[in-house]
Length: 255
Image 1 (cartoon, rainbow, N blue to C red):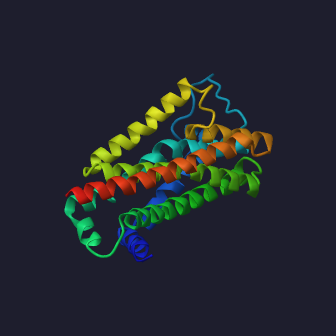
Image 2: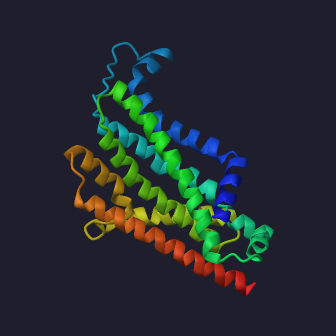
Image 3: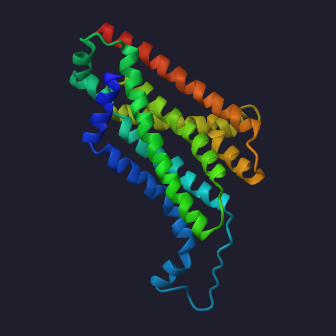
């Protein structure tokens, strides 16, 4: 608990509790607002050529919230990785981790304190981002119920939990923050490619979370595939943190 409080305080001093939620909010509302006000944006920059017709199809609220998730799946994931890429690697490189571990602190507690503190930051940021997006969607596009909003928030939060866990894992493998970011992004890309190639086999791949969320919003029911995929994602996240503790202990004791 002391380490956890230390991480929260450090994130506050580094202004992460301010700029990370603001960036996630911006990414969440950017596509919905741009889509709705696109005609006015086109007019403000000179309009369409004479005779040209540009029709914007009407979009359902579920489709619009998925636009927010699309931004979060690309730029949002990148922000999360950049925030976490030096959380352990930087301390290992500077020797701060050795000073902490000299005290009666277990390696797993050191890892889990960082994991939980960053999960709290990411989940709070995601909630605020989707909340603002949900507010504008209800005003501009139609009704998206609170139950649908919570479904999107909870199950997409599982994906970001895996991203946080993966980044923590690579923090224990490498001392270079750049390598941590590179291999985390590379792993996510490889997972996406493998899921697309073996779609008929990997029904419960974490990369399928967004598509299952859209299906659930369209049908009005949470599918068993979504629950199963979320469960697999959570198990993978916990396994990554467990492996992180083992690798970190082995590397530190070797030193």
